[in-house]
Length: 438
Image (cartoon, rainbow, N blue to C red; front, side, top):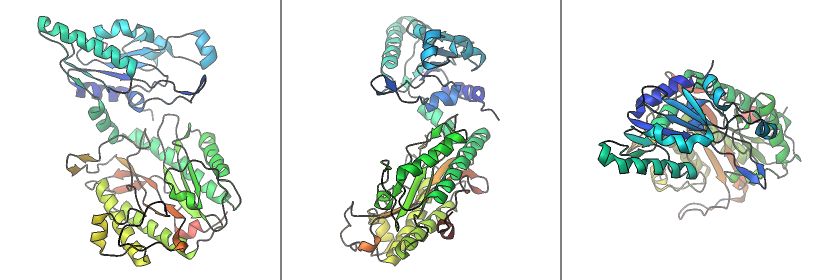
């Protein structure tokens, strides 16, 4: 089922009112010397256009009677295409991507002022696109200079984020199909990795297995730098060195997801014993994290909030840590004081979509944003027992038998009318399944 970019553009144009929006594509980024990173399109630009080339600029012009969606794109250039690949060019921007009108990118400086003429204001995200921002501000300054004589002109500059990110937060049915596919491929990769892991392997070998499956299954690659963290490495939240040897008796935490060709992402974390058998301490903490995650998943439903889901997980974790002797004190007091944060220091999830940490507010002023059908988020409690953070005053020192255990369990969940649909359920997580070796 194709993504309906034209429908999104009409919705965006309607929400702009009298503002003219300028939405730039991402630029190619240099890796080193004259080598560039693989190109990744800006998510806002992609959401409205589906156009996957660097440097383009999209105009959305609700103040005009015609030609309200205009693209400036890299021109067809046989020599450039020999070096860097196919370009759609001006004609392709119209015939394949629905632009009302398109121009070569080199004409932007000349034509932009005319397109913005007559708008009540400008919609543009400042601070990220230096040369284009300079050009846009020059156009705006010229309009402000002429406004006293003409009696009209663009009188304000606003970011498009409040409109676009609200649109992106609630996924369309077609987007949910793509997110299910990203989660399916991601879950398959996790299952393959768990079956293959043995003591003595290197973390990098596991990473290669995961990412090979992402690409072999039709994905673009990994949604973010994969985390393959054995033993104490799992207590480093964004560990990406992935070069340690997997040791008999340790746990392995894998946080990895597939990104599809159209940029929709999976994001799954699983933790399991490298030798196929939990130690008593590992099992206690694993069961606690799993209980916290299952309780939090039950709270994914319309009308609740991400904050409520987080607090649900925190309450289960803190109560369990008290029972294990890793925390001491009144449950509510521990939570209020944050006395657990040396063991659990992150939130329990984030929005998921075109960006892994997808756009959308979590709060509206003082009030948490309530969940609605079509929103997609991760649910990912964890525990990380190490000496990296000091133990708060009044809390018990950590015994050696607990140290070096890092556990996170993360699923991708779509909010539905009946509750939460776990998109990544094919990646097993029951304690018994984690102790099953392939």
